[in-house]
Length: 409
Image (cartoon, rainbow, N blue to C red; front, side):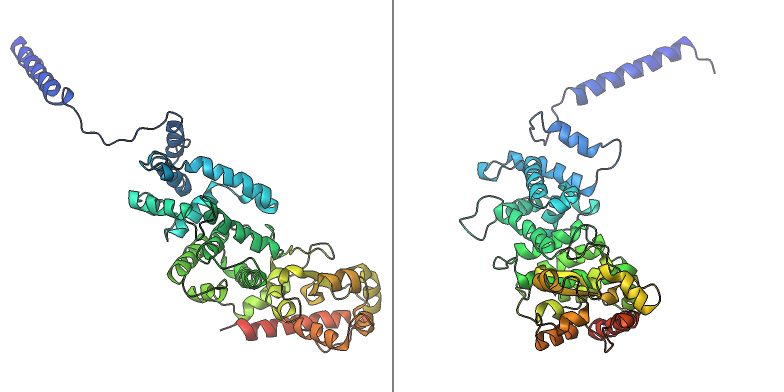
C-alpha cells in the first residue's frame, strides 16, 4: 500500500529516535568484562580445539583447552603450568621408552589419566562443567609427590609409566591390548599406591586380570570406555583397601564373569601365531587361556610371568612327522598343544625335543615333570607322536573344564 509524505517523515523521526537512544544507552556505556589475558601463541590453540574443521571438540581437546586457559596464568608462579607443552614432552618420552605402544600414546591418554585421578569421566558433558576448583584439583594431582625427593610432575608421570612397564613386562603387546583407557586405570592404581612396585606380584595380578578381560572380550567387548570408567571409580573409592592390583575386585564390581560357553568359544579359536620361543603373546585367545592357568607361572621357584614363553608341546618343526604318525593333518598351533614354560626350559632344554623324550631325559626331574604336566593341565593321554591329535583334543576339553570350574560363577 502506498504511503504519503507525512507518514514517511513520521517513520524517519521514529528511526532516528531509536538510533539515538541505542547510541546513548548502550554503545557509549562501559561493559563489564570477565576475561583472562592470553599470550598470542595460546589463542590459536583454543580456537583450534573449539573449531576443529567445524566439528565439536573431543572431550580430551576440550579439557586441554580449559587447562590452557587457566593453568599458565596462575598468580602463584609455582603453580603456573603449560599443560600442552608438558604433555608433548611426556608423549615424546613415553614413545621412546615404550616403543611397542608409540602409535597409541597421545594427548587423549594423558587427559584421560588426569580426569580419572579426580574421579571424573572424560565425557563432554562432564568436562564442559569443570570449575576452577576442579582444575586446581587436577593440577594438584600433577604436582603431588609422596616423596620430597621427587620433582614436579614425577609421581604423575612415573605412575602411568609403571602401567606400561607392567603390561609390556608381562609380554603383552598392542596386537592383544591397545586399549589406552585400561592403561589409565592401571596408572591410577600405581598413583594411589606409593609402595606398589612393578614386580612379580603386580605383573601376575595385572596379567591375570587382562587374561580374564580378553576371554570375556570375545563375547562382550569388555575393553570399553564404560568399564574403564567404572574401574577407575572403584580404585578411587577403595584406594586404602589394596596393596596389589585388585583385578578380581574390578571384575566383581562390574559382575564380569565368563560362562562355560564363553570359555569353550575362546578355546576353539585359540591359535598361536608367534615364533617358537618368542616371549611375547601374539594372540588374544591364547593369552586368555594360558593366562588363566596361573599355577603354571606362579607355583614354582620362578613366579613371574615375564620369565615364561609360549611353547609347543609337540614341536611345530616336527609337524610332518606328527601327521605321518597320526595319519591325518594335525594343527600344532592349537591351544591344546601350547603351554607356558620358563625361558631356560623352553629355549635351552626342551627346544625341539619330543615331549616324551624330554620328560624322560636327565634334564627334567620326575617331580618337575609332574609339576609341569599338572599346572599345564596335561590329560592322561600318551605323548607318543601317534597320539598327538588325541592329546590335543583331550587337553582342550580339560582346559575348558578346569577354567570353568575356577572362574564360572
